[in-house]
Length: 453
Figure 1 (cartoon, helix red, strand yellow):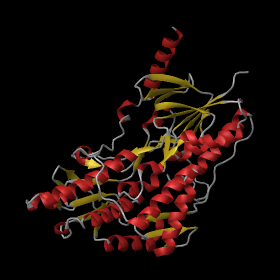
Figure 2: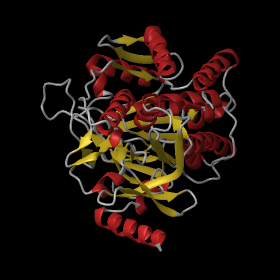
Figure 3: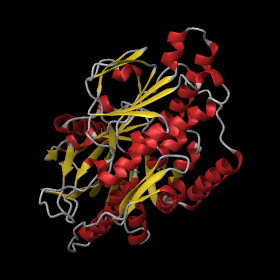
Figure 4: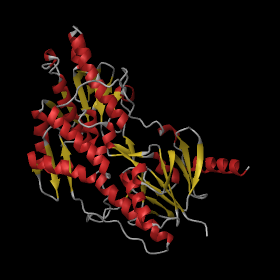
């Protein structure tokens, strides 16, 4: 009999944990396991704000897949379409070659993209903080603004370069604002004249910061941000962005050359190519993580609408967090194996263990197992959680070493030469290349016919 072929798309929290579980559960040679991913590492994204601030090196968060996966064949590229009739995934390799990867079982875990809106100037002038390249470029840009402000005598230019606006009151936005504010405070020791000019703003359309943490911790986080001299404005968003200003929906126009956009994520457009029902772009699956009417396709993570069995609300969906994605990865691997063996599949169920928010320095808020923590206890829980959640020993060692070096020797505020005067792009470079259902079928037919010829 031909060995079954299991294809996993994406090596984020869900994809990586699914692959590791599959390698443990499936005997050597019993099945072929294939990973489609543009990178050969798993990004531990919750600590990206600390890369942007220079507290952690980029390599600390790039968890090598080659260290963790022993029997998985890696296809370096992005899945841009799916043909469920021919059971193939259309893949655009990093070499720009387009190929088909056949599957017997398919696990979709492509993650999400930065959510953007039709705001004039946003994509041209905004910075993101969703991957390693963006984090490093963002850090260099912020430090460059202080250097340029210090080198000019023009008060208007100085004000523009010393004002920073972060959009998004979720985890990434709050942590990015706090981390980079501390970076500019440290850098400003070299530029005493700039200390009174540096301004940080955090704006969000929601009425509260970090609503998942509850009212008390949300207010605690708000107080900590304001204690860092970050102006927080809620129920406000951005109306327009130019090279020299940011216009807000409350009528204010801020002289500013740095807008950092962290206002949420949107599911990967890959899910639309399957031709199956979606909910706000997320692929609908059952409690067993299977796509209805396509029993050989599974979906997990940020781009899957997974019913949350821990909630009384019948329509509740699992939140798009690393905690849920990891556990969905384990469950989906077990269900893939069960489906190959024609055994019953199990439902995914997980009760939230809590949330942590690292505000840099020794400031943090946390809610482990429903208990509200702030101050040093929250700091200890937050750091311990991240070390536990990192999926490899070398990654834990690097992160721990970075934290210790910073605590013992202080930080470095030198630029690394990545900015080149241009903002990073937070629009996924493949976003314009995803195929819809009809185009996926057409492209797969063309590729397969060419291969047969």
